[in-house]
Length: 149
Image (tube, rainbow, N blue to C red; front, side, top):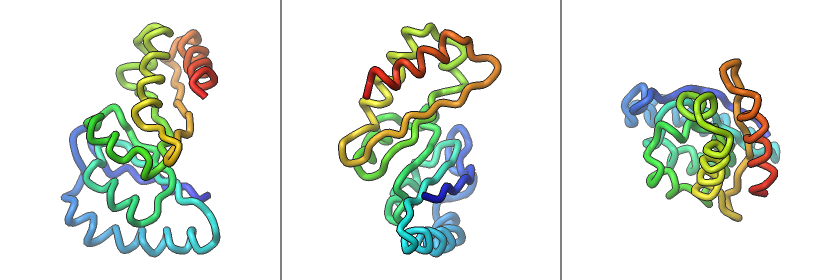
């Protein structure tokens, strides 16, 4: 696949109004995504921040995998997209990875996978590690990935 990496969200909402995004940027993504799809490749899309307003647009445009910052979005609303797109997980680096116990981290990951993963959409297990993450949490993250299957 081909990975697009644009950050469209803040901690609360899109950086611009959804209608502006649809007017100016959606047609450009449509053209780029169609070229990727016509080459037989998957479209992977990354954005930090709250992008709930444009997830339906990304699905409509043919995005196959979404790497979004789930922890800043409404979990119940985000769950509605499970099965329509695969989620590349973003394990919360702001409040979870560096600060919780290994057991709490595993519980968080299992819940995230349960909420967003389906046989139709799936999960791509991924977590970013920074210097403030304890080694035991790094180990717990990978163990959770293997244990959840």
